[in-house]
Structures are given as C-alpha cells and as structure tokens.
Length: 190
Ligand SMILES: [Zn+2]
Image 1 (cartoon, helix red, strand yellow):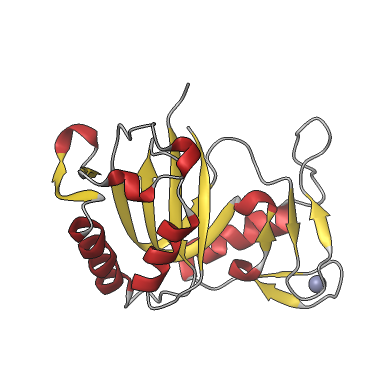
Image 2 (tube, rainbow, N blue to C red; image 1 turned 90 degrees about the vertical axis):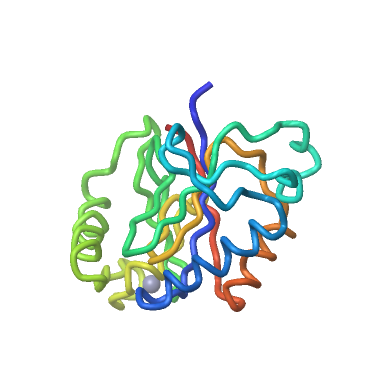
C-alpha cells in the first residue's frame, strides 16, 4: 500500500486571505484536538494527529488511526489527485464533457493540450481559460469540473496524509471556518 492523501481545497479564498484563513482552520482543528499545534520534522513538518483525530473519520473507517499529518498549503497551487490523470473534464456552462483518457488510460492527444497549456498559464499568472468545445465560451480554468475532482485550482488547501476517510460533517466544519467558502476534496495516492 502506498501513501494516500486527502486535501480539502478552498475554491474561493483569494491569495491575500489564504494565510489568515489557514490560521483560523488550524486553530479550530487544534482546539478540537484533531491535530496538534506543533509541527514535527520527522514527517516533513506536518501537524500530527491530535487525541481526537476520530472526529474527522467516517464510521466505516474509524478504526484506521492516522499515521501521518497535515500540511497546510497557502499560495497559488494546482492541487491534483496524484497518480493517474483525470478521465474527463466538463464545462460548467453547457455540461459538454470531454474525454481526456482513452480506453487504455492513455492521454487523448487532441483533447488534452488546451487544458495543459491553461494549467501552465494559471500557475504563472493565476489567470487562464479554455475554450469549451461545446458552447465555444472561454471558461476560466478553475471553473471546470473534473472526473472525481482530480484537479482543483486555488490558494489554500489542507492536505492530510494517511488519514481515514473524512465525514461530511468534518468537511462542513472546515468549510464553516472558511466562512462558508466552496470546498472540494482532492484525494489520491503517491
Ligand atoms: Zn460549454
């Protein structure tokens, strides 16, 4: 078994707000005993699980004690699902769905380049769009929907390594501390 991660990404936080929001969520998680306030060097400077880590754990996964910690990312980040690639991407305006992988899980050469280019531009500038093949509108990169939320583009993310699957209540608690911002869960393995 490899290492797996779950990252709660704030889709609405602006770059300038991310550090303050990160502190607020971390403060809540420490107060609730979900993680420890101090960071440890031996797991890449992550916050280790606190005594009440199980508050985050889904019932079916609640006996899987987390073995690793939390990294908080602030700053412009392309969050992605680790191994593999998104199978498809969908336009939020017209719902046109573009397949990115063929049946052999190879990238479809004609479909992928506009998104790859936009990702590079977004990384550098924070602004990028892709022309939708369905409605022909240039849709901002962060607005597209990806298969199993493989990608998210934002300025704030809470990356938990080797934790049990989260409950919806835990995700709602984090979203609440973010002032009701939209969040998405990006997960995967390395
Ligand atoms: Zn469209």
